[in-house]
Amino acid sequence: MPVFRGILLLLLVAGLVCFVMYMVTRQASWRVLGLRLVTWTVVAGLVFFAVLAIERLIAKV
Figure 1 (cartoon, rainbow, N blue to C red):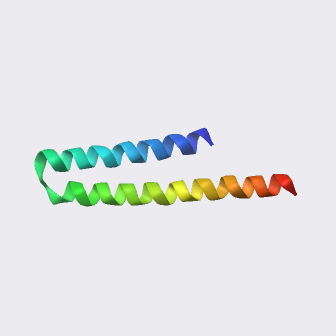
Figure 2: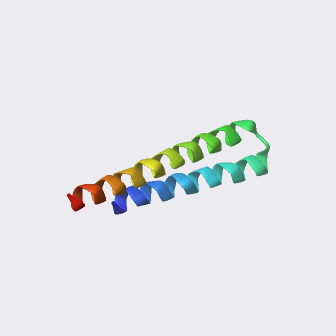
């Protein structure tokens, strides 16, 4: 699980860096890349919490 948390953190930081680059350069490609990274970060976070919930359900059975 720590590896997955690290990947989530790196994805989030990369998205923020892309948004900063967009603000500096005003190139739309940075904004698009940042939105894609943030979208996939949210998806990965939802999967992470789903796995945690499933693990807890299995542990109670």
